[in-house]
Image 1 (cartoon, helix red, strand yellow):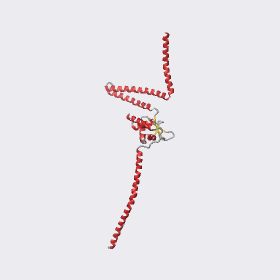
Image 2 (cartoon, helix red, strand yellow):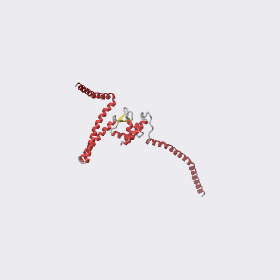
Image 3 (cartoon, one colour):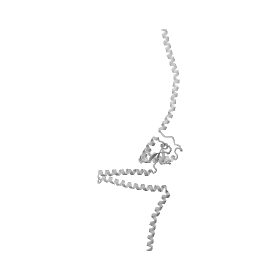
Image 4 (cartoon, one colour):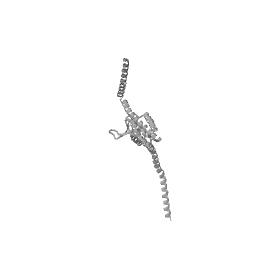
Amino acid sequence: MSHVAAKKERAQHERTKSRQQEAEAAPSDRKPGGAGTGTTTTACPAAETTRDGGSGDLPESSGDASPGYDTAASRFVERFAAELTEAGMQRMAARVFACLLVSESGALSSAELGERLRVSPAAVSGAVRMLAGVHIVSREREPGSRRELYRLHSDIWYQTISERDAFVMRWIGTFQEGAQALGPQTPAGRRLLESVEFFRFLEQELRNIMERWQAHREALRHPDSGAGSDSGSGDSGSGPSDSGARSDSDAGAGG
């Protein structure tokens, strides 16, 4: 009986001692845990900063990284892009187009566009795809490098108007089919036929304007030769007229 009691007492003592050891060890266990938690908490802002940096604004660009792209250029890009957006152009495509327009060479890489516009490469890629689809921008490889550049066409406005010409010709065909289907003598048919004539007139005038623009552009790019040819044509045009006038005058005086 005393042996059993002694055994129970020792077991109780062991349990008590074990609980005391756990109680003594608990603060130290919490300390590393707390330290670990503190370390994790300290690391969280860095991780959040990384996430913010990755999905938000890009770092400020340096002057060397974006030569010629200062505050004034940035303001112009955003203003012109806003006007293009109001006219119906996709916003990011408008920003990329305006950014290329003010660049020194008219060509920038995806990284350069992203840095200047502070957007992701994916946003640049989507905008360039849209601009390339309407033949405003072309892709090219930089000589001696694997880097891809996005370049504006040399005569972007001429190219844009020329692309519209193809749409006008399709509209003419569609209007003609509509007029035949509705009846040329009906009010709707006559309205469509008048639309056909309008767009035919517009298409011809646009061709004339584009031809005149090309001649005017050459004169702008080569002012000496352009001024000379204009001056020469003006002199040759007025010369015979003046001479004829003098001859008539002399003839009249002689009579």
